[in-house]
Length: 439
Image (cartoon, rainbow, N blue to C red; front, side, top):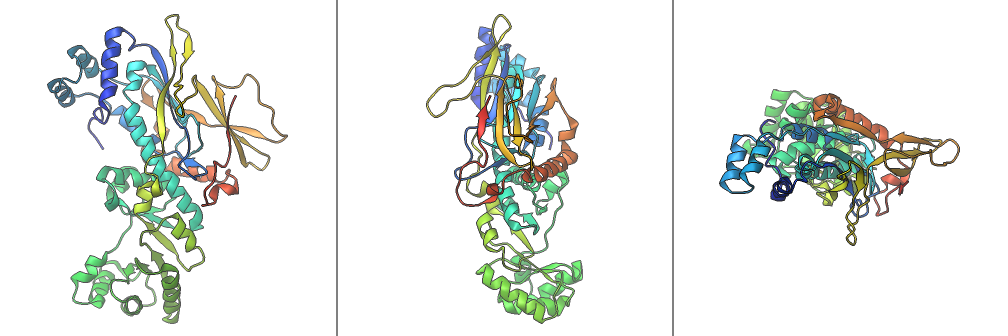
């Protein structure tokens, strides 16, 4: 995706810069941090997603003629500030959790070091990207964990906006989904795409049989036939009649799924189509997928629930100034102290404590660059560092970008899930599976 991302922001970012340029504080070196004060209610862990997209958006955060002219016409900031915006480029450094990493309350997911003016400009783009993508990835990871190895396809493009659909497909893929229905997500991020036909294709034809024959003639007998436009049992019978016992799969999009799936499996087997798979859709979420764990389902298609974060469309992350240099050049920790919205000031580093079985037991957040000495742990425990440098002097590390970055994030998420305690994967309401402590 090309074009400027500079106006994907809130007005007060620009007005703060305008005032700071006027009083001389705009160029104070500052540290901003993105973190979540809490997880969505009842969730036991979160999954970081959106980092690769964010780094590309920061690179495109440029005020070009069209943006500057609009700001001038609407008198958003002074002409002197427009001149500064015309030359805006992010030149700072960014550290953070790897994409695909698990996170918990207080995890310092992103640290940005730059001048105040350069860094504050990124607040909205940082939060809009990480909040949405991480929400989708966190919901998707829960679905993957209860699918018990069965493939899941993301198919929620029609349940969100056109740009969010692409982001959601990428976030779900990082979280372990196997494919998407969205072609732009496939082109932009290299995600496998799949899809065959909707009910409209069956309704177009004079009969269900004619529709099935047309599809099989176009895509071969290994295709997936949608069998619930009319009567499911009759649809299954026709599907095997048309495609033969080599039929790839049938899709079911309605009904009492546990009962229907069992009946369809029995019918397919009775017709000799013992290798034909069953895929189900129909407004699935992690709870309905878990409820189908004992049913003969072979794969799932999930739409609305995944692209809306399964009830939590934003991850609740915030972006706060945590330190700045004073006039003597020394770093000064700063923090918001208001009730229920307090933050912890200062530069932070983070590590996860793993026990002798490599199971995560604690999220450690170190004030400063790290501990003066290793904290005392049980014998055999170790610390896994969590923060990496994502951008240096305004240049993103290419390892986190594009198709390769997306695949790396997907692989990292899979490895991280192996470290979490088994309690992390319970769907019942609960507290974060490991505590966050400050040192």
